[in-house]
Amino acid sequence: MTRPTLAPPMVKPMDCIRKQVRQLCEDLGDAEKVNAALEQAGEGMGRRAADEFCAQTGWGACGRFPDCLRGAAAGLRLFLGIDAEAAVVESGGGGGGVNGVAAALPEGTLRWRGDPLSALADAADYPPGFESLRFASALSGAVRGALAAVGAEVSVVWEADTATGDAESRLRVKLLRQQGEQAPIGDD
Image (cartoon, rainbow, N blue to C red):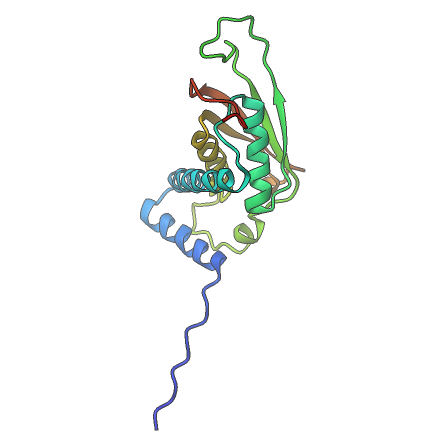
C-alpha cells in the first residue's frame, strides 16, 4: 500500500524575500552592494506598479512635479498600504528653465509613520558584516522607478527611517529632468 504524497507547504512571500536577500549577501559579499541591488529591484517593481496604477486609475504622464509626487503617494497607499503624504517644496527659480521646468528644480518629500518592511527586517538573519543592510532600499528604488515610468527622472534620498529609530520614514524626492512634450495628467 502506497502512502499519499502530501503537497509541500506554501512558501510565505516574506520567507522567499529573506531567502533571496540572504543569497544576495552570499553572492555580492558587501552590504552596500546588496542595498544597491535591492534598490535596482525596487526600481523595476516601481515601473511595473506605475503601469498598473495608470491602468487602474486612468493616470497618465506627469505634466507637473507636484502631480507626480502626489501620484507616488497614492501608489504607495494602493500597492503597499503605506499611508504616505506628499509635500512639495517649489524652489524659487527666476526663469531660465527648459521645457517648462524652472531653473531651480522642484523637490518634495514622501513621509509616513511605521515601517512596512519591519516584519521582514526584524526576522532577517543577517550574516556578520551586513548590519548596514537596508531592506528599505527597495522602497526608494520603487519610487524612482514609478516616477520614471510616468516621465519624471528623480533622485530619491532617505532623510529618516523608522527602521533606524526615527519617528517617521521620509524620502526626499528631487526632480532632475522631466520628459518634454507630454500632456499633463488627465489631458487626452
